Amino acid sequence: MSKILLLGSGELGKEFVIAAQRIGQTVIAVDSYPNAPAMQVAHAFEVINMLDGKALDAIVEKHQPDFIIPEIEAIRTERFYDYEKQGYTVVPSAKAANYTMNRKAIRDLAAKELSLKTVTYRYATSASKLKQAVSEIGIPCVVKPLMSSSGKGQSTIASESDIEKAWNYSQEGSRGDVAEVIVEAFVNFNYEITLLTVTQNNGATLFCPPIGHRQERGDYQESWQPATMEAKHLQEAQDMAAKVTGALGGAGIWGVEFFVGDDGVYFSELSPRPHDTGMVTLANTQNFNEFELHLRAILSLPIPEITQERIGASAVILANGHSQNPTYDGISEIASAPKSDFRIFGKPSSRPYRRMGVVVTYDSVNGDVEKVTQRAKELVKKVKVNL
Ligand SMILES: Nc1ncnc2c1ncn2[C@@H]1O[C@H](COP(=O)(O)OP(=O)(O)OP(=O)(O)O)[C@@H](O)[C@H]1O
Ligand SMILES: [Mg+2]
Image (cartoon, rainbow, N blue to C red; front, side):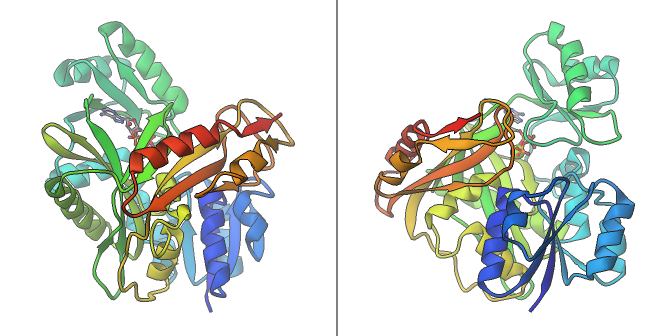
């Protein structure tokens, strides 16, 4: 059995650890604070600052894991190249972790090297260069720090007077050491999807049915599976996902994000790990959920097929304030609703908009995905996080 070092111990990590525990793997869960969700179900845990390369080296050396599995982006990922040289397996690969945490690296790979269709974009390293970039891209456009996630530091420029503000905001929300942003044309897309893609060491690249989602303040609010889309658009998305995951290398699940507009499918970005919108698979919409798929791929266990067993939706439970001891109201109410389920992540504290749990709903495969999504939206309103 293998020893897994999980870097990041949030709700996605927690479900991954549960999947790993079920088939007898050993997991050490790591994060910057104690009692993080995945630590609660792991064999052991470590509390370190994962952006500190020396601290990271020390726990790798201490545990000598068979697999180093990043669950978040905010890690000193440059160290991963060294770990690979030392013979460790980084999931899915050091290259994947490094490229995907930097918007410039992944965008240039996708657009220039692989010729995937992306929105028009420019980079800028100062407010005045941003002004120049905006004049080339046109208004409206979207500004994002090169290193950020969950919409941090991201804003839309609707008029010239927003440029200065957008620059300042990007600098507050940036995680990395680089003061650079990407500026993208604003896509008036009809809908957006996550295409969960599984790369295998000894098998074909597989795709889950597409997941639709709605974003607010940079985080997803509801997701549903399958997203209704034209067969040719799905095919385009699958082709792009196969190319980009192939170029990054390694085995595991990836959340590949696309926008679909009147003029077709745009590649947006991807995560080399389970995706938050993929929590819809916790409704058992598939024969294996996204965490089980990630695990199987990592362990080189065959995945004969991915089948859709139900349709489903997920809606997130958010906190509305700060608490060091959050409790929950309305759990009995959601538990009494048929064809639904929920998770409370067990986060030790809350802050405004922090994701504390998720509600999932489902129906048989020939059900109505819009109705299932509506049910999830209604149900989640019954839960209240007490401060
Ligand atoms: N160019 C764009 N045009 C229109 N909408 C956009 C554009 N870029 C991003 N968005 C919207 O903002 C959301 C977040 O953007 P993006 O995925 O690039 O940021 P992120 O911070 O990496 O998010 P996460 O890490 O949570 O996936 C997208 O899912 C989409 O809804
Ligand atoms: Mg995204």
